[in-house]
Amino acid sequence: PTAWLDRRGAPDLAALLRERGWARAVVKPTISATAHNTWLTSPATAGADQPRLAAQLAGSAAMVQEFVAEVVEQGEWSLMFFGGRFSHAVLKQARPGDFRVQDDFGGTAVLAQPSPALIAQAQQLLGCVEAPLLYARVDAVERGGRLLLIELELIEPSLFLAEAPEAPARLAQAIAEYLS
Image (cartoon, rainbow, N blue to C red; front, side):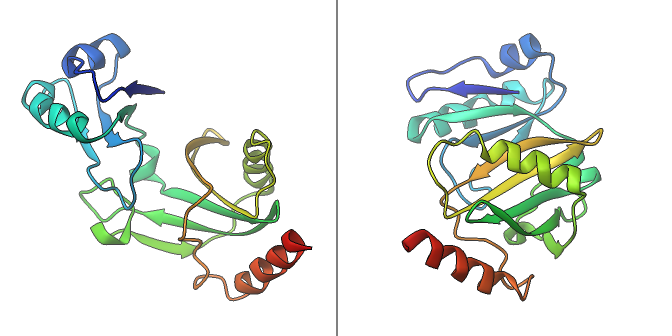
């Protein structure tokens, strides 16, 4: 679940959390990379966090999402697809005491094999995009055997090619097919 916040708005963060019934939430810019300006809030801290939200909205639109505990408890999947075909996946883990999985914040990523069901669900998510995709990265967590989409990366430069030795050749093949 996501609340989309316009740059011109300044919603009451505590009221938003109360209305949605969220015990914890993540605030982040709508366009960002590497968890830049991404932070946690809660009903207990929302009042103190209000100026931070106002400052963020002065620079860009933002989104507030219910905190997904599975990111910390199980990790976040990144499934790479080249030319519409599954290539490889990594499981990203946050450093202890943090929720961000990016290596800039101490997170790690290891090559991992998702179940065929998760791959099929990620493929289904890609089917929602009408344009042909040279590559895509589906960032999601698993909840009860189902993928919960965190981000659909379509212009992401980080495809975890170093973690999967065969992946660069698969990407090169997808590029050749895309260009032909």
